Length: 341
Ligand code: TXA
Ligand code: MG
Image (cartoon, rainbow, N blue to C red; front, side, top):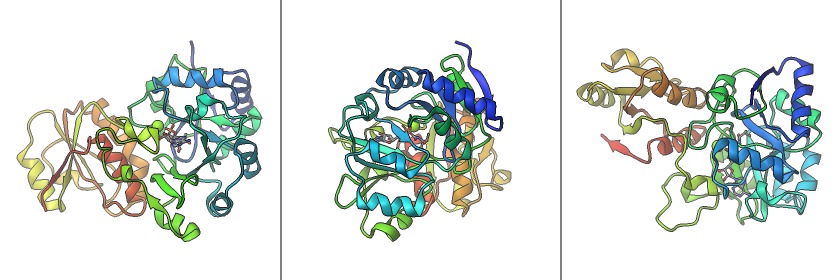
Protein backbone atom coordinates (compact mmCIF):
# COMPACT_ATOMS: atom_id res chain seq x y z
CA UNK A 1 0.00 0.00 0.00
CA UNK A 2 1.22 3.53 -0.78
CA UNK A 3 0.79 5.82 2.23
CA UNK A 4 -0.40 9.31 1.22
CA UNK A 5 1.05 12.33 3.03
CA UNK A 6 -1.76 14.83 3.67
CA UNK A 7 -1.48 18.42 4.95
CA UNK A 8 -3.65 19.41 7.93
CA UNK A 9 -3.66 23.03 6.73
CA UNK A 10 -5.45 22.12 3.48
CA UNK A 11 -9.25 21.78 3.71
CA UNK A 12 -9.24 19.36 0.75
CA UNK A 13 -6.77 17.11 2.61
CA UNK A 14 -8.97 17.12 5.74
CA UNK A 15 -11.89 16.14 3.48
CA UNK A 16 -9.78 13.36 1.91
CA UNK A 17 -8.88 12.02 5.37
CA UNK A 18 -12.57 12.00 6.33
CA UNK A 19 -13.41 10.13 3.14
CA UNK A 20 -10.76 7.42 3.76
CA UNK A 21 -12.02 6.94 7.34
CA UNK A 22 -15.67 6.71 6.27
CA UNK A 23 -14.59 4.11 3.72
CA UNK A 24 -13.05 1.92 6.43
CA UNK A 25 -9.38 2.92 5.99
CA UNK A 26 -6.71 4.03 8.44
CA UNK A 27 -5.39 7.59 8.76
CA UNK A 28 -2.77 8.79 11.25
CA UNK A 29 -3.94 12.14 12.63
CA UNK A 30 -2.29 14.82 14.74
CA UNK A 31 -3.61 15.49 18.24
CA UNK A 32 -2.25 17.79 20.96
CA UNK A 33 -0.77 14.76 22.78
CA UNK A 34 0.68 12.36 20.16
CA UNK A 35 -0.32 11.22 16.66
CA UNK A 36 -3.21 8.76 16.67
CA UNK A 37 -3.90 5.91 14.24
CA UNK A 38 -7.57 6.45 13.48
CA UNK A 39 -10.39 4.25 12.15
CA UNK A 40 -14.20 4.30 12.27
CA UNK A 41 -14.93 3.49 15.93
CA UNK A 42 -18.39 2.13 15.15
CA UNK A 43 -17.15 -0.51 12.69
CA UNK A 44 -15.35 -3.51 14.18
CA UNK A 45 -13.81 -4.55 10.82
CA UNK A 46 -12.16 -1.13 10.37
CA UNK A 47 -10.91 -1.19 13.96
CA UNK A 48 -9.31 -4.61 13.47
CA UNK A 49 -6.97 -3.07 10.87
CA UNK A 50 -5.49 -0.83 13.59
CA UNK A 51 -4.41 -3.88 15.61
CA UNK A 52 -2.82 -5.44 12.51
CA UNK A 53 -0.93 -2.28 11.46
CA UNK A 54 0.46 -1.68 14.97
CA UNK A 55 1.05 -5.29 15.94
CA UNK A 56 -1.07 -4.47 19.00
CA UNK A 57 -2.18 -7.21 21.41
CA UNK A 58 -5.92 -7.90 20.91
CA UNK A 59 -6.75 -7.44 24.59
CA UNK A 60 -5.65 -3.78 24.72
CA UNK A 61 -8.69 -1.47 24.23
CA UNK A 62 -8.72 1.76 22.22
CA UNK A 63 -9.74 5.35 22.98
CA UNK A 64 -12.72 6.77 21.05
CA UNK A 65 -12.25 10.39 19.90
CA UNK A 66 -15.12 12.86 19.57
CA UNK A 67 -15.41 16.47 18.39
CA UNK A 68 -18.09 17.74 20.82
CA UNK A 69 -19.21 16.77 24.33
CA UNK A 70 -22.65 15.81 22.96
CA UNK A 71 -21.02 13.00 20.97
CA UNK A 72 -20.17 11.16 24.20
CA UNK A 73 -23.77 10.26 25.09
CA UNK A 74 -24.37 7.63 22.37
CA UNK A 75 -21.11 5.84 23.28
CA UNK A 76 -21.85 5.29 26.97
CA UNK A 77 -24.62 3.76 29.07
CA UNK A 78 -25.02 7.02 30.91
CA UNK A 79 -22.77 10.02 31.38
CA UNK A 80 -21.38 9.95 34.94
CA UNK A 81 -21.80 13.23 36.91
CA UNK A 82 -18.01 13.28 37.32
CA UNK A 83 -17.62 13.24 33.52
CA UNK A 84 -19.76 16.35 33.17
CA UNK A 85 -17.60 18.23 35.68
CA UNK A 86 -14.32 17.03 34.16
CA UNK A 87 -15.49 17.83 30.63
CA UNK A 88 -16.51 21.35 31.68
CA UNK A 89 -13.05 21.91 33.15
CA UNK A 90 -10.67 20.10 30.78
CA UNK A 91 -12.34 19.24 27.45
CA UNK A 92 -11.32 19.63 24.77
CA UNK A 93 -7.88 18.51 25.93
CA UNK A 94 -5.49 15.74 26.96
CA UNK A 95 -7.93 13.84 29.19
CA UNK A 96 -9.56 10.44 28.54
CA UNK A 97 -12.50 9.23 30.64
CA UNK A 98 -13.57 5.61 31.03
CA UNK A 99 -17.19 4.68 31.82
CA UNK A 100 -19.66 1.91 30.99
CA UNK A 101 -20.11 1.51 27.23
CA UNK A 102 -23.26 1.44 25.12
CA UNK A 103 -24.08 -1.29 22.62
CA UNK A 104 -22.97 0.73 19.58
CA UNK A 105 -19.32 0.43 20.65
CA UNK A 106 -18.01 -2.78 19.04
CA UNK A 107 -16.06 -5.29 21.16
CA UNK A 108 -12.93 -4.68 19.06
CA UNK A 109 -12.76 -1.15 20.52
CA UNK A 110 -13.29 -2.16 24.15
CA UNK A 111 -11.31 -5.41 23.76
CA UNK A 112 -14.28 -7.24 25.25
CA UNK A 113 -14.52 -5.03 28.37
CA UNK A 114 -17.88 -3.44 29.29
CA UNK A 115 -16.30 0.01 29.45
CA UNK A 116 -15.18 2.54 26.83
CA UNK A 117 -12.51 5.26 26.92
CA UNK A 118 -13.59 8.59 25.40
CA UNK A 119 -11.54 11.71 24.58
CA UNK A 120 -12.35 15.08 23.02
CA UNK A 121 -8.99 16.33 21.69
CA UNK A 122 -8.22 20.06 21.44
CA UNK A 123 -6.10 19.91 18.27
CA UNK A 124 -8.07 21.77 15.57
CA UNK A 125 -7.03 19.27 12.86
CA UNK A 126 -8.16 16.31 14.98
CA UNK A 127 -11.53 17.96 15.51
CA UNK A 128 -11.80 18.83 11.81
CA UNK A 129 -11.11 15.23 10.73
CA UNK A 130 -13.67 13.82 13.16
CA UNK A 131 -16.25 16.28 11.82
CA UNK A 132 -15.29 15.55 8.19
CA UNK A 133 -15.60 11.80 8.81
CA UNK A 134 -18.91 12.29 10.61
CA UNK A 135 -18.15 9.38 12.95
CA UNK A 136 -16.27 8.92 16.23
CA UNK A 137 -12.70 7.71 15.66
CA UNK A 138 -10.95 4.92 17.54
CA UNK A 139 -7.27 5.85 17.77
CA UNK A 140 -4.34 4.48 19.70
CA UNK A 141 -0.95 6.17 19.37
CA UNK A 142 0.29 5.73 15.78
CA UNK A 143 3.52 3.83 16.62
CA UNK A 144 4.37 0.19 16.22
CA UNK A 145 3.38 -1.52 19.47
CA UNK A 146 6.19 -1.17 22.03
CA UNK A 147 7.96 1.77 20.31
CA UNK A 148 7.86 5.37 21.62
CA UNK A 149 4.66 7.19 20.63
CA UNK A 150 5.00 9.47 17.55
CA UNK A 151 5.03 13.24 18.07
CA UNK A 152 5.70 14.16 14.40
CA UNK A 153 4.45 12.93 11.03
CA UNK A 154 8.01 11.73 10.32
CA UNK A 155 7.87 9.45 13.39
CA UNK A 156 4.59 8.01 12.10
CA UNK A 157 6.11 7.29 8.68
CA UNK A 158 9.11 5.54 10.31
CA UNK A 159 6.68 3.02 11.80
CA UNK A 160 3.67 2.98 9.45
CA UNK A 161 4.81 3.79 5.89
CA UNK A 162 3.19 1.28 3.52
CA UNK A 163 0.84 -0.04 6.23
CA UNK A 164 -1.86 2.65 6.31
CA UNK A 165 -3.76 4.76 3.77
CA UNK A 166 -2.56 8.20 4.90
CA UNK A 167 -0.78 10.42 7.42
CA UNK A 168 -2.18 13.88 8.07
CA UNK A 169 0.75 16.16 8.92
CA UNK A 170 -0.20 18.78 11.53
CA UNK A 171 3.31 19.55 12.79
CA UNK A 172 4.83 18.52 16.13
CA UNK A 173 2.51 17.72 19.06
CA UNK A 174 2.29 20.35 21.81
CA UNK A 175 1.93 18.08 24.88
CA UNK A 176 4.11 15.21 23.64
CA UNK A 177 2.93 12.42 25.97
CA UNK A 178 -0.40 10.59 25.72
CA UNK A 179 -3.54 11.80 27.49
CA UNK A 180 -4.31 11.40 31.18
CA UNK A 181 -6.59 8.35 31.55
CA UNK A 182 -9.07 8.24 34.45
CA UNK A 183 -11.69 5.58 35.07
CA UNK A 184 -15.04 6.79 36.37
CA UNK A 185 -16.27 3.20 36.47
CA UNK A 186 -14.43 2.87 39.81
CA UNK A 187 -15.45 4.53 43.08
CA UNK A 188 -13.54 6.67 43.89
CA UNK A 189 -12.32 7.50 40.37
CA UNK A 190 -8.88 6.16 39.63
CA UNK A 191 -5.98 7.55 37.60
CA UNK A 192 -4.76 4.83 35.21
CA UNK A 193 -2.26 6.85 33.18
CA UNK A 194 -0.80 10.28 34.02
CA UNK A 195 -0.63 12.91 31.26
CA UNK A 196 -1.04 16.60 30.50
CA UNK A 197 -3.98 17.00 32.91
CA UNK A 198 -2.38 16.52 36.34
CA UNK A 199 -3.56 14.63 39.41
CA UNK A 200 -4.00 17.96 41.23
CA UNK A 201 -6.21 19.21 38.40
CA UNK A 202 -8.36 16.05 38.62
CA UNK A 203 -8.62 16.33 42.42
CA UNK A 204 -9.55 20.02 42.16
CA UNK A 205 -12.71 18.96 40.31
CA UNK A 206 -13.49 15.52 41.79
CA UNK A 207 -12.09 15.59 45.32
CA UNK A 208 -10.81 12.07 45.93
CA UNK A 209 -8.92 10.38 43.08
CA UNK A 210 -6.92 7.20 43.61
CA UNK A 211 -3.73 6.47 41.73
CA UNK A 212 -3.54 3.01 40.23
CA UNK A 213 -0.41 1.24 41.58
CA UNK A 214 0.69 0.50 38.00
CA UNK A 215 1.30 4.23 37.43
CA UNK A 216 4.47 4.07 39.54
CA UNK A 217 5.32 0.37 39.87
CA UNK A 218 5.69 -2.74 37.74
CA UNK A 219 2.81 -5.20 37.93
CA UNK A 220 3.51 -8.07 40.31
CA UNK A 221 3.52 -11.52 38.67
CA UNK A 222 -0.06 -12.69 38.12
CA UNK A 223 -1.56 -9.26 38.99
CA UNK A 224 -4.44 -8.06 36.76
CA UNK A 225 -3.99 -4.64 35.11
CA UNK A 226 -6.91 -2.16 35.47
CA UNK A 227 -5.76 -0.78 32.15
CA UNK A 228 -4.56 -3.59 29.89
CA UNK A 229 -2.02 -1.25 28.21
CA UNK A 230 -0.05 -1.00 31.44
CA UNK A 231 1.07 -4.60 31.39
CA UNK A 232 2.96 -4.34 28.11
CA UNK A 233 6.56 -3.21 27.65
CA UNK A 234 6.25 0.30 26.39
CA UNK A 235 8.09 3.27 24.98
CA UNK A 236 11.21 1.19 24.71
CA UNK A 237 14.03 2.22 22.43
CA UNK A 238 16.42 -0.53 21.32
CA UNK A 239 19.00 0.78 23.80
CA UNK A 240 19.03 -0.43 27.38
CA UNK A 241 17.86 2.62 29.37
CA UNK A 242 18.91 2.99 33.01
CA UNK A 243 17.58 5.82 35.19
CA UNK A 244 20.20 7.43 37.41
CA UNK A 245 18.49 8.96 40.46
CA UNK A 246 21.00 11.53 41.68
CA UNK A 247 21.80 15.25 41.81
CA UNK A 248 23.46 16.45 38.58
CA UNK A 249 27.05 16.40 39.88
CA UNK A 250 26.78 12.76 40.96
CA UNK A 251 25.03 11.85 37.70
CA UNK A 252 27.83 13.54 35.70
CA UNK A 253 30.58 11.78 37.66
CA UNK A 254 28.84 8.42 37.28
CA UNK A 255 28.34 8.78 33.52
CA UNK A 256 31.87 10.04 32.92
CA UNK A 257 33.23 7.04 34.85
CA UNK A 258 31.11 4.66 32.73
CA UNK A 259 31.88 6.04 29.26
CA UNK A 260 32.56 2.87 27.28
CA UNK A 261 31.75 3.05 23.53
CA UNK A 262 27.99 2.61 22.96
CA UNK A 263 27.12 4.53 26.13
CA UNK A 264 24.97 7.65 25.82
CA UNK A 265 23.18 10.09 28.10
CA UNK A 266 19.56 11.28 28.18
CA UNK A 267 19.91 14.51 30.14
CA UNK A 268 18.33 17.92 30.64
CA UNK A 269 18.99 20.85 28.33
CA UNK A 270 22.45 22.33 28.86
CA UNK A 271 23.85 19.38 30.82
CA UNK A 272 25.44 17.64 27.82
CA UNK A 273 28.47 19.97 27.77
CA UNK A 274 29.72 18.44 31.05
CA UNK A 275 29.40 14.83 29.85
CA UNK A 276 32.07 12.72 28.14
CA UNK A 277 29.55 10.57 26.22
CA UNK A 278 27.19 11.44 23.34
CA UNK A 279 23.96 12.90 24.75
CA UNK A 280 20.40 13.78 23.81
CA UNK A 281 18.72 16.51 25.87
CA UNK A 282 15.00 16.67 26.64
CA UNK A 283 13.85 19.92 28.28
CA UNK A 284 15.19 21.92 31.20
CA UNK A 285 15.55 20.35 34.67
CA UNK A 286 12.45 22.02 36.15
CA UNK A 287 10.47 22.34 32.89
CA UNK A 288 8.22 19.27 32.99
CA UNK A 289 6.16 20.49 30.01
CA UNK A 290 9.27 20.69 27.80
CA UNK A 291 10.43 17.28 29.04
CA UNK A 292 7.05 15.79 28.10
CA UNK A 293 7.09 17.46 24.68
CA UNK A 294 10.62 16.27 23.83
CA UNK A 295 10.88 12.84 25.53
CA UNK A 296 9.63 10.52 22.77
CA UNK A 297 11.64 12.25 20.04
CA UNK A 298 14.70 12.00 22.31
CA UNK A 299 14.16 8.24 22.79
CA UNK A 300 13.99 7.75 19.02
CA UNK A 301 17.16 9.82 18.47
CA UNK A 302 19.13 7.74 20.98
CA UNK A 303 18.51 4.77 18.67
CA UNK A 304 18.52 6.36 15.25
CA UNK A 305 21.18 9.10 15.56
CA UNK A 306 23.47 7.70 18.27
CA UNK A 307 22.92 3.94 17.94
CA UNK A 308 23.26 3.88 21.73
CA UNK A 309 23.47 0.51 23.52
CA UNK A 310 23.31 1.78 27.12
CA UNK A 311 21.61 5.04 28.05
CA UNK A 312 21.96 6.72 31.46
CA UNK A 313 18.88 8.88 31.93
CA UNK A 314 17.92 11.79 34.14
CA UNK A 315 14.33 11.44 35.33
CA UNK A 316 12.07 14.07 36.98
CA UNK A 317 10.24 13.92 40.30
CA UNK A 318 6.89 12.13 39.95
CA UNK A 319 4.82 15.30 40.46
CA UNK A 320 2.71 17.56 38.23
CA UNK A 321 3.36 16.80 34.54
CA UNK A 322 6.63 15.26 35.77
CA UNK A 323 4.52 12.28 36.87
CA UNK A 324 3.65 11.58 33.22
CA UNK A 325 7.31 11.88 32.17
CA UNK A 326 8.38 9.62 35.07
CA UNK A 327 5.71 7.04 34.16
CA UNK A 328 6.90 6.81 30.51
CA UNK A 329 10.62 6.87 31.27
CA UNK A 330 10.46 4.25 34.03
CA UNK A 331 8.77 1.92 31.50
CA UNK A 332 11.35 2.73 28.82
CA UNK A 333 13.92 1.74 31.45
CA UNK A 334 12.10 -1.47 32.34
CA UNK A 335 12.02 -0.08 35.95
CA UNK A 336 15.83 -0.19 36.18
CA UNK A 337 17.00 2.63 38.50
CA UNK A 338 20.41 3.33 40.07
CA UNK A 339 20.10 5.42 43.27
CA UNK A 340 23.18 7.51 44.06
CA UNK A 341 21.54 9.61 46.78
O1 TXA B 1 -3.32 10.91 23.96
C1 TXA B 1 -3.79 9.81 23.74
O2 TXA B 1 -4.53 9.23 24.55
C2 TXA B 1 -3.48 9.16 22.38
C3 TXA B 1 -4.08 10.05 21.30
C4 TXA B 1 -3.99 9.43 19.94
O3 TXA B 1 -5.40 10.37 21.62
N1 TXA B 1 -3.99 7.82 22.34
C5 TXA B 1 -3.44 6.81 23.06
O4 TXA B 1 -4.03 5.57 22.86
O5 TXA B 1 -2.49 6.97 23.81
P1 TXA B 1 -3.33 4.21 23.32
O6 TXA B 1 -4.18 3.15 22.73
O7 TXA B 1 -1.89 4.23 22.92
O8 TXA B 1 -3.49 4.17 24.86
C6 TXA B 1 -4.78 3.95 25.43
C7 TXA B 1 -4.63 3.47 26.84
C8 TXA B 1 -4.12 2.05 26.90
O9 TXA B 1 -3.24 1.93 28.01
C9 TXA B 1 -5.40 1.23 27.11
O10 TXA B 1 -5.16 0.02 27.79
C10 TXA B 1 -6.23 2.19 27.95
O11 TXA B 1 -5.93 3.48 27.45
N2 TXA B 1 -7.69 1.94 27.79
C11 TXA B 1 -8.46 2.17 26.69
N3 TXA B 1 -9.73 1.78 26.91
C12 TXA B 1 -9.77 1.30 28.17
C13 TXA B 1 -10.79 0.74 28.99
N4 TXA B 1 -12.04 0.57 28.54
N5 TXA B 1 -10.46 0.34 30.26
C14 TXA B 1 -9.19 0.49 30.72
N6 TXA B 1 -8.19 1.01 30.00
C15 TXA B 1 -8.46 1.41 28.74
MG1 MG C 1 0.14 3.78 22.81
